[in-house]
Amino acid sequence: MSERPGTTSSPTALLRARGIRKSFGEHEVLRGVDLDVRRGQVIALIGPSGSGKTTLLRSLNGLETPSAGTLELDGGPAIDFARAPRKADRFALRDRSAMVFQHHNLFPHLTVLQNVVEGPVHVRRTPRAQAEARGLELLDRVGLATKRDAYPRELSGGQQQRVGIVRALALGPDLLLFDEPTSALDPELVGEVLGVMKELADEGWTMVVVTHELSFARAVADEVLFLDDGVVRERGRPRELFVNPREERTRAFLHRILHPLDDEPSA
Image (cartoon, rainbow, N blue to C red):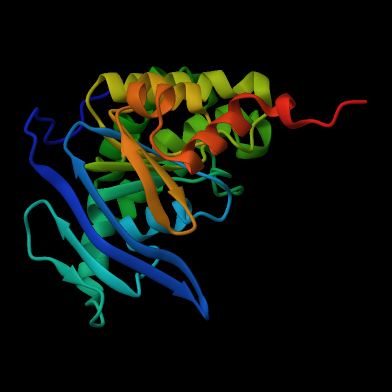
């Protein structure tokens, strides 16, 4: 695939979140979440819909502004959201991370290659020729070099999502954030996207993934966090959390996802 900047085996936290809270009106979506993301680590966020997973993910790169709590990036000064954060702080979060969205969010009027190079050219100020060369290299590595001049409407959902991943990689981020990247795909297309993500994990990219693909989380993640009602109910290594969860709420959620027919009423 590709090498990311700063790949290291150091256990130092790249991102440290403490007491993250977020409210929308009277509804408190996050109620004091702590999270450490170390370089080279893959963290999976699982939990029912509405549990706060996506809001937490968006808070990690400044797309959402928490109501309270702190974020510390790569050992730098903590951003305290109890005070109005500086615009520069939010930009710093976005500069070091890249998001892969649930619906890939490609620009429909741009070709595949143009979608990939827009960020490096306009955000990173990379010379266009250099950005295009890098973009073609990345597209080739996910099997999409021949689609460079195609438009998003001419691609399958899985191909569009792979372009979304390449677009994120082209920015050279320290942290990759995935928000349910396979939930909008037809079942037969899920594997091609998860395969790319597994390659990234194997290469040492730092990733936080919101997912309902529990088999992927179990195989790839270093740590799994189960969120429910805005708090982390349980966290641990996949082998421990999936096989022997400590919390009853975690057991109930996993059973419902892994054995959906068990709760169906009998005829």
